[in-house]
Length: 135
Image 1 (cartoon, rainbow, N blue to C red):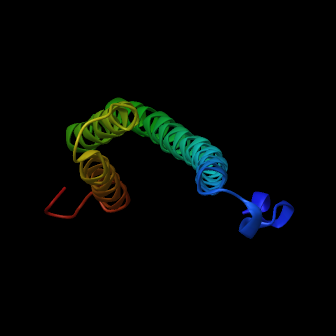
Image 2 (image 1 turned 180 degrees about the vertical axis):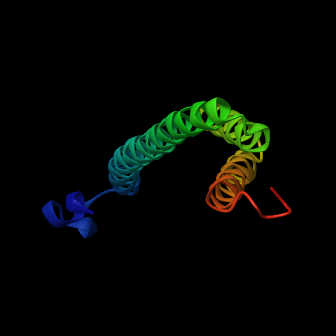
């Protein structure tokens, strides 16, 4: 609309008005396109940061699983060692799947993380109370 501020619309020919409208629309579309591209860049950055955080967290959990699993193995506790191994496998899979563009990725990663937490929780409870019939 800036062109209409500079020109007297009533002194323009119909062709000049048409050209002014087209130019203004073109300028507006470039502005909208540039804003959309900037928002998309920011969104991609946030998504990559989130994926990195999930991968980092999974790596931490894998390290914890390995440490606790090795401790359980030296004690001869097969159940707790297996739970640690299952937790580590789930976390490794979640850390990899988060980067693969597949449908249902959020559900898959959430399920794997939930299984991992469940396995480690049962392991921690069994290690604290070895006389429990579940353990």
